[in-house]
Image (cartoon, rainbow, N blue to C red; front, side):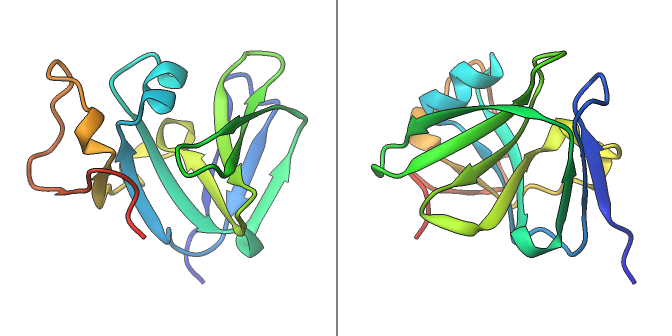
Length: 136
């Protein structure tokens, strides 16, 4: 059995364990991710929801993406750290913030999404595939 991906918020009130490998890992440069991260991008790993065990109570914040679909961000009510996202249009996936991993070195980005909205002061790995928006 492969080692699960584990992580959570800074204070430990929210924890997750995920079996299986990421379906997709990316840096997202959309304005929502820039604002939410307080930087030029957000870094994420998306997994099959079936492999996720989540403990703790998260506060949820819904927002409408450029696509018109609702994405829900989960963050800790104690320390305020954003931990995960879910998507109404894709209930079978669960996305975690790469920095929330207990072993962030396991994160391997595959692509940059919304590269058209990237900031010059936030250069990312030039070797990654870049998409102007979200790939289909």
